[in-house]
Image (tube, rainbow, N blue to C red; front, side, top):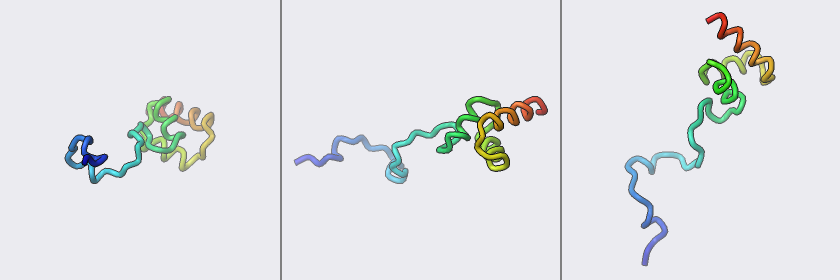
Length: 72
């Protein structure tokens, strides 16, 4: 008798990972953070901080991100 898990290859450490099914993406789970990180030179951390300070208006965030890029 075979069990369903008999055909799964052994991956050391995999048992400790949460089974979310999501692959890591630049910016994590927040689509606005991901959008800013992919469309500007900001890191996900910088994008999160910008969203925290200015809200979720993408047009406004892109404008601010461009000025940050020009200054830096």
